[in-house]
Amino acid sequence: MAAFVSVLAMGAWWWGQIDESSRSGPALPDKPSIAVLKFDNLSNDPDQVYFVDGLTEDLITDLSLNRELLVISSNSTFAYAGRAVDTVQIGRELGVAYILRGSIRRAENRVRVSVELVDARTGGTAWSERFDREISDVFTLQDEISRTIAGRLAPEVIKARVGETRNTPTKNLVAWDLYLQAKAAHAVVTSQKQADAVRLGELAIERDRSFAAPYALVASAKGVQFFHQWTDSPARTLSEAIDSARAAIRLDGDDPKAFGALGYVYRLTGDEMRAIGHLERASQLNPNDANIRLELAHTLDWFRKQDRALPEILEAIRLSPRDPRLEAMYFYKAHILFHLREFEASLAAAKEMAGALTNDTWRIFYHLVRAANFAYLERDGEARKEIENARALRPGLSLAAIRKRFEGSNNDPENRRIWLDALGKAGLPES
Image (tube, rainbow, N blue to C red; front, side, top):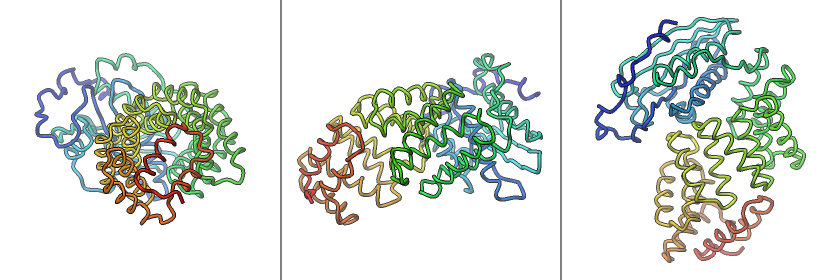
């Protein structure tokens, strides 16, 4: 491909000449950075959205495996779908130098992909291309696009990737299609959608038992079912989740999502060493995955390793600054800082959380983390007010109710003791 040969010279794209004082979002990192927007679905069938989204997410994953790039999470970039926002503004808000956008049209056994790489500092097009391929060539196409982009952004390291062949995850396109549908279902955290994710993932496995990705997805979905108690047999569901994640790793020992899934499930069992070890391995395999960073931060916090958890949650926020789960990210940031006894900093994180709140569950956590901090700062009036606000949202909230919620969670008992002590000081009644 001619575009692949025409690589930008190092320094031609570098952002040293840009006036950073004019930027309103995160500062540009000290390495090439990119955000891939949700591709447009140009197919006649609107039900092909899962296919387009899956293809876009696969492209993001492929790019994010390149350690020389900073790649923003799809959770943040997909938030711009359907909105008329120019690329310069998106670049400022996400703190990246480049934006990739495009469209996909699927018709029978063929796919057409149009892509455009935009310099987010100027709004100018750095590269564009259109690809027409058989569906069977879709994995080669993904690799071709990602290698071209990496070559455009980091020409000094592209030599290491030239000549590499992307491992085809499956030759069975029905299995791959089912897996993409399972991913779309897993992204919606409801009992029915997680059941759908397990069902579709298992159908993908039936089509190709050597396809690692659906095993990891099924493990994650069953972990969610166990955590929310959306199962009639929690112990069996958890055991099956572990088996499925282990199977994914056996099939693909370089799959970060498989290691991430197993680490997440082991956290639920209270196995600190395995939970942290597998999530750290996942983060090493894909340092740009905000989901993995979030789970690693949560797990380190879970086992009272807040000093190690803090940089992980900060990096998760950096990788996905417009994530739909920002309320959770900022809560964990506040919770980690609270346990580090950095109470004013924790309150500042809670203030960030306030701007991201979407539901009463997280509003309650917001009030509770503020109450806990105020209690230790001996700001008793403010602490009691936050408890009143939390109980207005959930009248039955009490120390006994929270203590019961902790039963079977397998998190660090000292975390529980300090949290309950702070809320008691703040005025939360025993029952």
